[in-house]
Length: 185
Image (cartoon, rainbow, N blue to C red; front, side, top):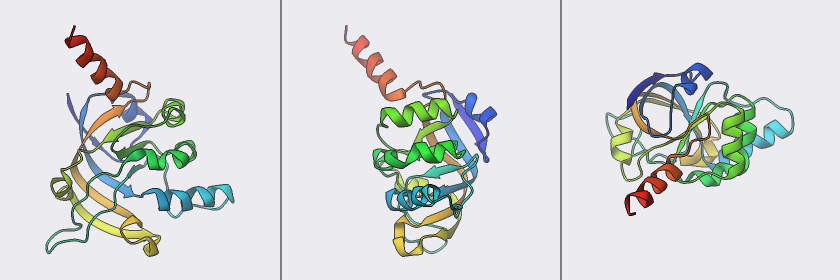
């Protein structure tokens, strides 16, 4: 089922998203990869403020390419998510509600998704140029020295994602594998 959501990603919106749902996201999201996540968690560990407000926010694990003429950003394909696993639970505890990436998540992250009533989306790997067309505006907001891995604030329209892990812990990767194996019987 295709659903449309507009940020901020509140708990009410999250609870209506189920593993397997196709979702089009419109609104503000942030980009960050592992180097930026490490810095964010170091700030939290020191009791300092973050450069972005993660409450009810979505972070997209992406290192976009430079913008082409007439575009806000270049190709924007997802990064493998497990690289953010050491940092995700602390950000979820601070109110982060959505993460976009690709691939499996560790058990600690899944437990934190359930505890914090959050959601993990997958963007389609290999569709980076198409995803880039959903980005209307991009503004560098923190860690410029990280280049492509700097934190950017994006304004997106109908960014296509799929719910992989919903707020109840249902995991599309496990559900899909089971359905496939059952079909072979």
